[in-house]
Image (cartoon, rainbow, N blue to C red; front, side, top):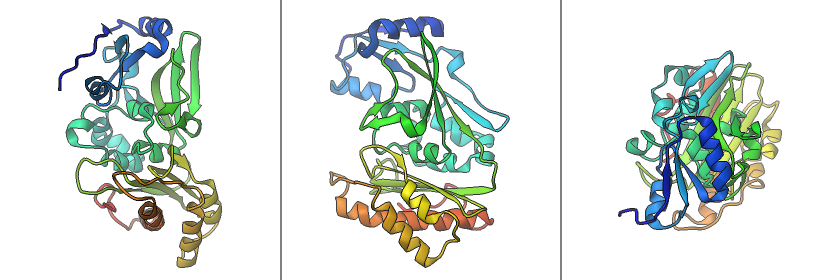
Length: 297
């Protein structure tokens, strides 16, 4: 399907020029990085910008590096970049595991992590992992830079805290100081490229504390504080898993759609949480499945 919409194309030479374009056009400008969402929306008439701003030539938006205990993921870093990074594999394996579930290899080669959270679809696969790592989104406008905790980033379905005149420059994750392990469980209809019917990420720590987050089980990805409260301070047991499963059902609000019914999602939320917790704890002690090799799908 060709792109028939008319718009101005701008490829800024530096960040200052890019920010001035967004300041001028605001809601009528769209950023182009990976383009996996934007190009589809242009073809289908879902996006009708006056200007498309190509950010791929801005070197300050690139880079994947660990500075001390903080991983900086530049806005142009793709999911394939994460998957191929020895640093991510060694230090942030849960991020690797979630990246492997995103769409197909072809899409992952172009799709950026920043773009995934900017699309803010409820099923964004990167969101639960970023949530349990307590990531921070760095955004910049002409007035300066802001740091937005990922917990405050998603404001609704396809809505974020990003202002119309701002650009995401990077996402930062701090490596937890305590020994930990994680798991991302994604429920999908078939093996291969599919949007999540539901997804749950877990980080388990050696002191019996836990972080839990979900996607595709509510209007926006989110952490699960009630579930974490039930879990924290306790070793996993069948009784604890039942209590946690009951708690998480108070925090999700899935819908019925073409991919799944609400009732099925609720049932599988309990299953996914239990399996993710068990896998994360097993990995904490050097057991369990290898990251990225087993999934609920």
